[in-house]
Image 1 (cartoon, rainbow, N blue to C red):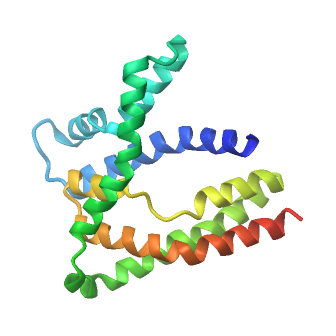
Image 2: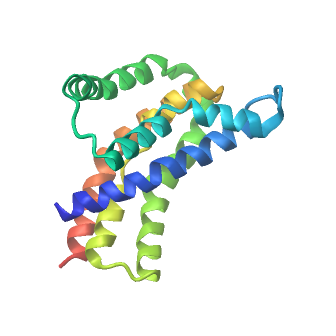
Length: 192
């Protein structure tokens, strides 16, 4: 329960931070300047980002002490359960095996970065800032998962290379079947 609470806190901090950073960078790098300039485009895309809107609504409802609203919460729970399989089907439908050969380098670099270098950096930074073994373990498990499937949707929505992102999601998810058990063994060894 303590680990779940710590992971929920990390998620609450990382989702807005990551989305603001990624959306802002994608507007600057990918999109052509439109009316009003870059800042207006960034503000418009941030205001339309479903993850940021969800976090803002959740914080508002929690702060106001609204509690569960029967129809809305039940519907959101059903849609939430269906969201991941639907996004994964979209990712799978957009994988173009014939074109993946030309994108091997970005897939390899992103996979090594996310599944090897990032967890190693988490261990190093956790020790440098003095996190406990338990906190380091939670951060390591949190950081060792493959790239989020929502990154495909974001790449598609923002004009990025959605087929490349589909390949990255698929390869990292497959590789995580090997890397996550190794990470769990590492966490068990660290907490002895």
